[in-house]
Length: 266
Length: 368
Image (cartoon, rainbow over all chains, first blue to last red; front, side, top):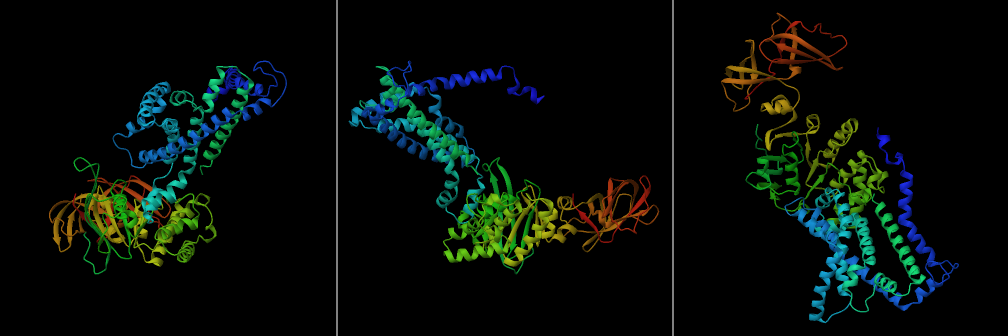
């Protein structure tokens, strides 16, 4: 019985699978291939070259945007991870109580609300604050990114905490560890893989964001994704492909690290 | 049976403790005005079915829960409201709760380090503890690289290392298989003798309680039903619950015929008279329940002088002993157990009319 319900034995399975993989990866493959095009077109192959990588790397606008992206992602992911760790401790270490599911809903709200709505709301609020304070730095982007990164950092940390025997913390307390010592010596080391995973997830999400960034940024605060979007409105050369390829390699690297860290669960 | 006043010092004195979960009105009353004294250096067992409150009492002593009312004294000092890390009491957890990111030696050292003991002392104590539980070769292993029985030993060593005044053990043997459990029972007794530390042991396994304990408190539904030595609990159960929970017991409805000092003459079903032990303060007339252990009665041929008569309905052979089920003429089934030996064969067959002779001084009169 069980065998006949195995999806792999259904007719057409291989065909559908092949189609899905092609739909997912063919466009990316084309993009990556044309990053190595010697010519100026993103559609006509004129031979292999690394010229567009060199162009992109020596473009100061790209350098600045990339650096800005990384700075925002590091700050936003760090703050979000700390907040998410505290939130995860608060929602898993006190048993259940009335209002707990409401807390879950509030924490995960950024996953539910359409991004464009958040973006417009932030634009309005931040423009007011800009007028009042005169401050126009990166703080707005970092705050906005932190907000939508929190649920992504929260999920792996909470999952890790929930799979952790709470008797371990009781045992630490029983063995004369104060709450802070118990956290430092027992909870935190055991939670580390979850925290790392949460941080990396938040980092990638921040790095990738276009919509909220586009609305919140002040003039001259291009991040890599918004810079690329801006370029696409003008002449499109394989330089964009080259930037996208580097970006892709970087993201894949982080995802691989994420899996590696997550697997060491012991 | 209540705790007799003792000249021995009490390690733990629980007085009038109640614990209500989920708010006073309508909450769950896990412990209902419990009082019990646990003597210094004794192996004390809290025995009862699940949900009787035994683990709650242990958690109150450890400090993982706080009493709703009442006092918990440790050598005369009120510890009822101290957090767990300020109580000189350590726990062996049911799940062991060993720290998975630390080695065996680091686990054992943890409590001493938290107490701020000098490194040399920590090292010496860890060595001594490893030797005590015979785990020296495993000192640098992680705790998930050792077997369940070994984890049990490490959990014990970890809890004993800071030399607690009282060691609390929460069903620590329940995860082990039968043979290992037997071994660990003897091991625990040895450790208790060698360290001289007061052990409070929680279990639902009556056999475990009888083998290991100096004294046992039998609990049910948030109350302590009886406190006594294993033989007091087994031979002189205070009430029907204790008699039923510990070992096998036949219950017969009987009537008090007359009373002589601490004994009563009971009229059993069928009219036979038996001398029965009467617990202190029990009533001295009217209907009672006669409790008789299966091994305290013999099967006799019909017509021989035995107090009870019936028909043999079933014979169950189980190696060392045989259980005979007798359907009494004027009552329920009665089970008789006889010790087997190769040259001692009782010649009875199912359906035969038989008599049951109860051993002298082996009937316990209990109130319903």
